[in-house]
Image (cartoon, rainbow, N blue to C red):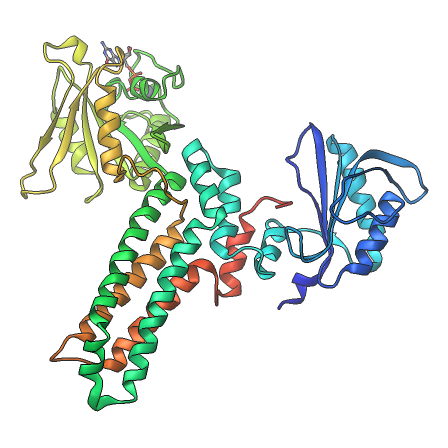
Length: 467
Ligand code: GDP
Ligand code: ZN
């Protein structure tokens, strides 16, 4: 492959800061046996037995002890990267780790040892077939998981659950392609042959299976990405109070003076493991105050970017002319929940109702609740889950990314086109075969077969250093 993928690399693998243990990791590059041996001697004063923990002194060029700790040697291919790997586990202080790191660079100079880029260890694991691309992505997702459910499903993806399902799909597509391509050589028999082999049934089966994977992946993507929810409404209707009620903590500044939430306050909470990024905003109103105007302009920016808008109103006033003006400016097609807050000051308690819009179907949901008394918050949580498309009870999802969903949807599209080309009457076996090939290509891109270097660059650059 690329030459950059064959240099020896080194990085501090543990998080910055102080901790009991700090790890410096070296991957010795393609055929890095000589480098591995030289580095072990220079750093630990000895060569290390494979896969055994050795308690050694890490020494500098003059033989002075920098730290003492555990050193491990994983000869290729039985290592994380598939190359010769040396791991030095010393004390977790930033300065001592830097000393050990500098010492590694100095000792490895002759072999062009250099600092690893973000994700470079995992990139090598991928290039050396230790992990496929979906699993490599799961490594980053596991590290970054913001909820327990996300971490568990990233673990499943890392174990290969997602990749296995994709591979099974690819196998079925390949089997069908072989059948169709064999038929292409005997055009006069094509109908009987495909009929006898139940090509339609096989295609329908692949379709069904893909749909199941897509549902699970969609759930998984939700666990990873979460939903961005913006609180919008006039000043003083209780936006900050609602954020607090949802978060269950005093977070945003709650004050009876209109126009205090000038800057955005964001908080990530979770509902059934789904991260909800909730953004409190400046109250929307006509104003001459320059600072407030900036806050309001920013609020509209946040609204544009959100997945869901919670439009807060005072239940006592109902929908005022100002509220109607605000609602009219919401981006079309974005889900809106109208929240009538402060029900504790009215005669009617918390409840949900669905309003049918003038055009008949895109109705909006209206929820009456009290942020201050924390009454009716569960109704809102349930509605947010519904909007997110979360299907309760799907325990075993695998963590997936937007990239995977796009590929799965594209594959499904190609399968639908394939089905059309297989229809009697306007059958075109060439196009049938071609759509199957394209579907397979999309599926392969998930696990990283034939993935462009550009895409790999984007994926791995988002990792942390040392992983
Ligand atoms: P924001 O400007 O929309 O963020 O509104 P705040 O959350 O700062 O609330 C404005 C005022 O309304 C504060 O005095 C809150 O205590 C009060 N408030 C908010 N929610 C409720 C509620 O559900 N019931 C009652 N009675 N007061 C509320
Ligand atoms: Zn506020």
